[in-house]
Image 1 (spheres, helix red, strand yellow):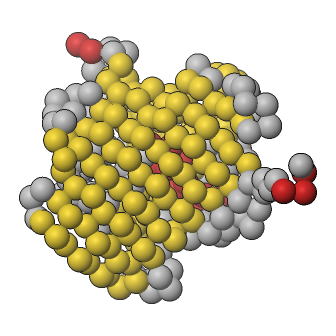
Image 2: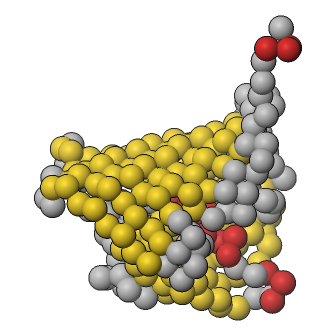
Amino acid sequence: MSEILQRDHRSIRGVIKYTSKKPERLDQERGREYFMINVHGDGKRTIIAHSEIDDRPSVMRDATYSVDADWYPLDCFVRLTVNDRFMGTGWFRFGPDFAECETFTALEGRVRQRMQTNGRLRTFQNHAIACDAWHMRLFDRSKGPGVQGIDEVLLCSPDHRGATGPMLFRIGMGIEYVGEEAIEIAAGKFDALHFRMVAAPGLPQEHPPYDVWCTNDDDYVLLKAGAGGYMQTHYELVELHHDDTGAPGDLA
C-alpha cells in the first residue's frame, strides 16, 4: 500500500475568533475565520481561508492564496459576499514584474487589470486575517527594533474589511518590530514575535496602529492581533491543528 500513497506536504489548520474592543461591545464576537495552510515538499505553500464578519453589512470571503518557497506571491482566488449578496469574484496572478487579475463584480461587471511592479511583488493582501502575519516576514530582524518600510503592497480591496472588488490596489506599509514575547491565548502558550503596522500610505482612510503576534518560527502563524482607533477590533487563534497528530497543540 505504501508504494501507491504519497504525502509530501504538511498541513496547519486553525480557527481565528474576531471580537470587538469597543466599550459598548466589549469582547462581543463579531466574526470568525477558518484556515488551512499546506506546505509542500518544495517549500511552496497555499492557504485556504474562509472569513466571516457579522457586523452589518456582513462580509463573507473565500480566498486561496499561494506563494513560492521564498514567499513571493504566485496566484490568488477571492470570492466575496457582502450583505449576504454576491459582490465579486476574481483571480490574481503575479509575474516577474507585473500583477494581473480577471474579476467580475456586481458593481463594475467584468474587469481586467494589469499593473507593473517593482520587480517581483513581495506580498499580497487578500484580507484573510491569517495572512496578516505573512507580511511580517519582510521585516529584517537582524537590524534590530525599529520601523521598516515596504514600498509596494498590492491588495484585493482598499476597504478595511475587504468588502469591495475584488480588484488590484497599491499601497505601502510601515512595520515596527516590538520583540519576542511569551504569550498565552485560547489556543495555548506560544513563543511569539510581536510586530506593529504603523502606517499604510495610499489607503483611502488612515489605518490605526495594528499589532500582530505570530509564531517564532518559519511559518508565521497568526496568534493574535488587534487594531485601535476607530476599529477597536481583536483577533485571536482559538484552535490550532497539525497534520502529525490532528489535534490541537502548542508550538512553544
